[in-house]
Length: 333
Image 1 (cartoon, one colour):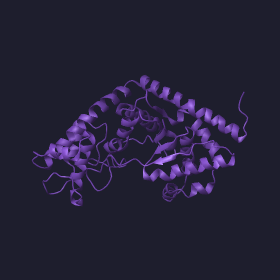
Image 2 (image 1 turned 30 degrees about the horizontal axis):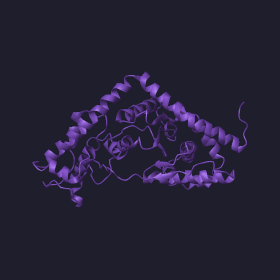
Image 3 (image 1 turned 180 degrees about the vertical axis):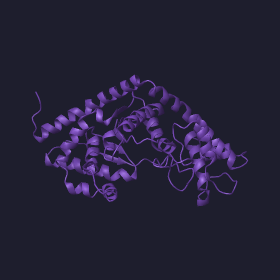
């Protein structure tokens, strides 16, 4: 099977768009490939963090991914800082990466332009990301369009290392832009994608941990138009209705014709909103319950994360040792 590496930052506010757009697909296809799901907490340190909040968000994300269906028996789920090879591999790759490559990265230029003082980590984190990928000889890296440049940099670094040391040491990874199975828009602004940064804003997003009453309230507030017809449409004025129908389609797995048939007797958009809310509530209830169980049993969560870290280290640590040997370092006896 092909090997896949996915990194996820513990930034909180996981919402319905994150789940339907990415996590649900990971869960459904995790048996098809060898998957490494890494909670990239070291990447989070490129901007100032509240230490207690970061610790909570890291554990919370791990619990949420397991609750959503990432199976530790099928996939390797681990916290990045639990595998020291990531930080060590980053330093080794720093020593073959030209500074100019990092300075031209679009996200670095955008973010650094907004800061008076730029942390070294912000400049260097693409090398850490390259190490995340290359240490596992990943064939594929599913990313959004905004992260494609970082995978291309990882390819450049791998090729440079292979050239400098005259051997095919690293697998050259391929960025995979997932087909948009579910592009979920903001309930309050259906022309813009549902955003983690706005997830706390009431009526914008449905968060995976929202209670059923809050989910229903959010959908009832969803922006639609002044019409009544429930149909998929390319009309920009129907963006709100399209978003609701798209969510229903993604959650139920039904065809467009089946979705429309389910609402053939609806009396208007009010019925549509309640119907979509109900299937979302039914989908999220078991996820929320499983999450709460894991968060209330830290020993079990720690056991699963420790197992994942051990599995990841069994791949990454020998790769770092091979890098050291290739680069001329003396390995400990």
